[in-house]
Amino acid sequence: MQILGLGTHIIETPRVKKLIEAHAEKFLEQVFTERELIYCRDRTHSTEFYAAFWASKEAVMRSIGMKWRRGISWTDIEIVCDSAIEPHVEIMGYCRERMEARGATSFMLSFSYSRLFATATALATRI
Image 1: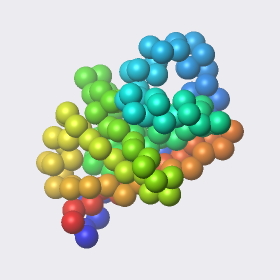
Image 2: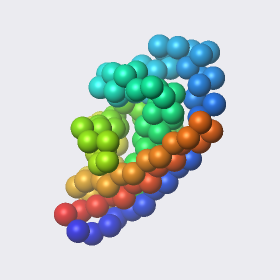
Image 3: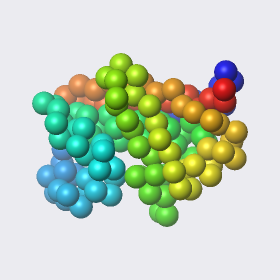
Image 4: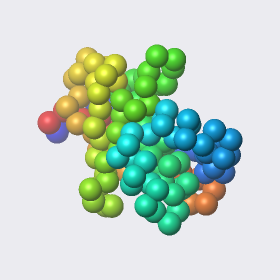
């Protein structure tokens, strides 16, 4: 396995809570896929999971040498938690093109959260 990029991001959980309160479903649907929404809504600490998933998306972008800008869809990056210990990333659209241009074939992802912060680290890899 070859590591092609490292990305990390930290976000304030109360900021995410304010965005959800101010913009409700419009915000959630712009940032999260249906599968992510279902997963987060089912959690006791849903706001913390939303923040962790958002931080994860940012970390993935940074690991392939990009950051969010207009024209990039947040939902092109999906955080999938089939196992709470090993989340994985599914990527589409422009982000997928950037990933392939970088030579990456997969990601390793870790995230953590508290009431105040959520953080994530992503490694872009080639197997």
